[in-house]
Length: 421
Ligand SMILES: [Fe+2]
Image 1 (cartoon, rainbow, N blue to C red):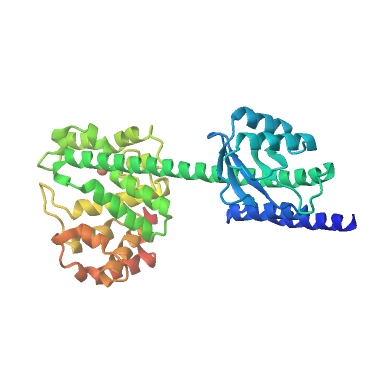
Image 2 (cartoon, rainbow, N blue to C red):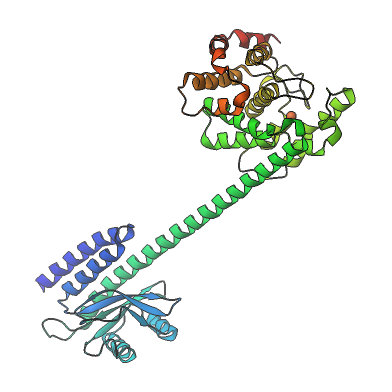
C-alpha cells in the first residue's frame, strides 16, 4: 500500500507539471500522449487509448494509443445519443458502468477492435460536455480492476479532459482573434481605398491641381514622420492630407476651374470648402482622430487671420498646421493657370516670411530637416524629391538655404516673431 501511495503521489506530481505544459501552445498532442502513458503506467495497464470527441462530426478521434494492434482506426463514429449518455455518466462512473460502456464501444466498433480486449471506458467530461474518452485494457498483472483503481483513473481522466478542453478553448480564442484581425485589416483596406477614391474625385473636379490631394497627403506624412509621430498618427495625417480639400466637391465647378485669380465673390465661394469638408467628414467614424478638424482648419493661420474660424496659435490642431504647410508647398511648386510654379529659393523665402504668422515654426523646421536629409542622402528614400519631380532639377542648390532656415528656427529667432503678433 505504501508503494502504491508513493506511486500515486509521483503520478499526480508529474501530471501537475504536464497540466502546465498542456496549457502552452507547444506540442499539445505530444503532451497528451505523455500524460496518457503516465496514466497507463500508474496502474501498469498494457493497452489503451485516449480519444477526443468531435461534436460537430460525431466522431471520436484517437490521439494516443498503446498496444491496440496493427492499425486501430484513428477516427471512430460516435452517435450523439451515445455521447450524451457518456457525458451524463461523467468521469466518476462505477466499475460496472465503465465495463458495460467498454462492451458497448467494442460492439459498435467490432471491425476496428476485432482482436483487442478493452475492459473499461472512462468518459472525459468537462462542464457536463463530453470531451473524449479513455479506453483501457487489462492490467499487466492480470488482476481485476477495483473500484479504487477506477477512482484513480477517473481523477487522471478529469485532468486530461480539462487539458484538452482548455487547449481547444485557447485555439478557438486565437482563431477568433485572428479572424477579427483579418476583418479589421479588411475594413482598414476598404477605408483607405475609399479615401483614395475621394482624393481622386476631388482632384478630377479641379483640373488645375491634378494630384494635389495625394501629394499633400504625402508631404504631410513626411513632415509628421520627421516630427516623430507614431505610425498610426502618420497614417492618419496622410489621410487628412488626401481629404483636406474634400469640401471642394460642393464648391461651384466654374469657380474652381476659373483660369484667373479669384475675384471677391469667387474667393468667398471658394472659402466655403474647409467648413464644408468638415461637414462631409464629421459623420464618418475615422480610424484616426481629428481628420475632420484637419480639413476644417487647413486654412487657419497662427496670427488668427485665417478662415473659417480665425483660430490663433495653439487653438489650431497640430495636424492642421502640418496639412497647411504641405498644402502651401504643393500650391507653390505646381503651375496654376494664372502663374507658373515658384523656384525653390522663392518657396523657401515665402516660408521664411510667413513662419510664425501663417506657418508653425516647428512644422517648417521639420519640413526643412526632412528635405535636407534627402538632399544630403541621409534618408533612405527620396520621397520629397520624387514628388517634386522633373520640374526641379537644381534641388541640391537650396541646401545652404535649408540649413540657414533650420538654424534660425532652432535658435528661436522666428518663434519670437510669432509671439510678437
Ligand atoms: Fe484647401
